[in-house]
Length: 511
Image 1: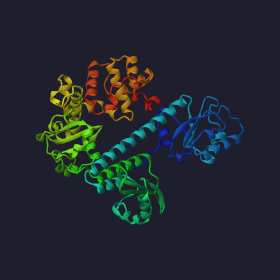
Image 2: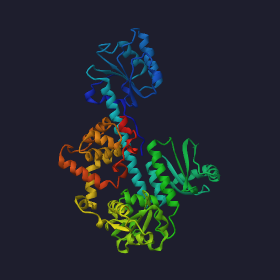
Image 3: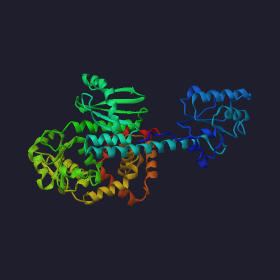
Image 4: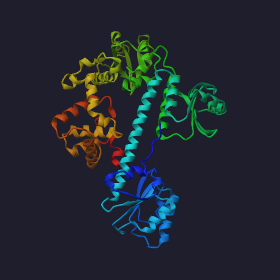
């Protein structure tokens, strides 16, 4: 997975509406621009970190030629990406002394026309940075999904998938440091140099990780296990340190490998918590050719999803759940079993309730079936009933829509918000706005945010959604979609009692 790279100077120059003109430094168009800094100081370098596109109008510049040379030299020593000079303010054109100094010393120099405000350049850089960040997150999400799918085929498949995503090598090691699997295969030759460090980590009282250098490679060693029990180690190495997205991917692999090595409770199907959660959340495409071998280990379709309070988790070992998937997901004990065996009835008999059950469904419809079971469980809990099946819920339009097809429609309608990096804030704001019938103050008070924050979020929502929020038909569709998904994305759609966790400042609040 290639690391996220900030936009280049060339990408900014290729933005037609900015009408920027390169005066020198055409050999440095691949310089990365990490931010835009506007400064009229004769020495702005104490306030720079490096990588900035510095913008100035030269309003404080004296006319001596050596001033331009010293100014350019300071910027280069600080590592700036380039210099933009605003024409038509203090100087009609870029001073020749500055052009000559930039050309001699190799600093990219850009003429910014009077018609282009500096803030427009800053906005374009921010847009490119946000676009790159979103693409990086999308790549990371896709890689995580593939990693989860690989976990269904065992620890070796996880190592192979992780190695394919990283610019380096991966070793799965036994607790004593002996190699179990390597990607690529020739990476197994590196294990001998890691054995002493692995043994040191294994002898520590608390699980710990280590970073070291080996033959010019940066190596990280992490323990694998659950609740302090170490069942092995994973070593990841490469020519450079891992980026943020790669570290997130490695952490995901560590969780999956730890769960794979820590088998599930006796008597339950050997399906670890991470994979069960992935199935219920739709992160695993059960019909993909790569997961074909999984079906033989899963309950026969149609299946029923039943859930109750997490305190029932020890029931995983009950023989009546031998052919079921069991686990704790989102604070609920979940059982997925063949509909003919009535796992919901068995769970209610063992616990005395409350228990909620979804409609019989296919394995590729587990997310929708889980949402149905969650709604039924809410009713069972509120009415103190032992068992509520989805078919017992009140009817109405939501009842008609509460099917796998309805769930897919809801996901499709809200997809522009669901994939956004601030999805939680956007979905919660849209729900509050619709629930308040478009009354800004009431919606903002329900969310616990300032009404200007809510207005900004609604502006973003209008930009992302293809429909018109003023259209009553479209608003009704959005409301039904939000209600359909409120169990699948509970943090976003849970109605807050005044100021809640949703009122905390988010990336949107600070944009």
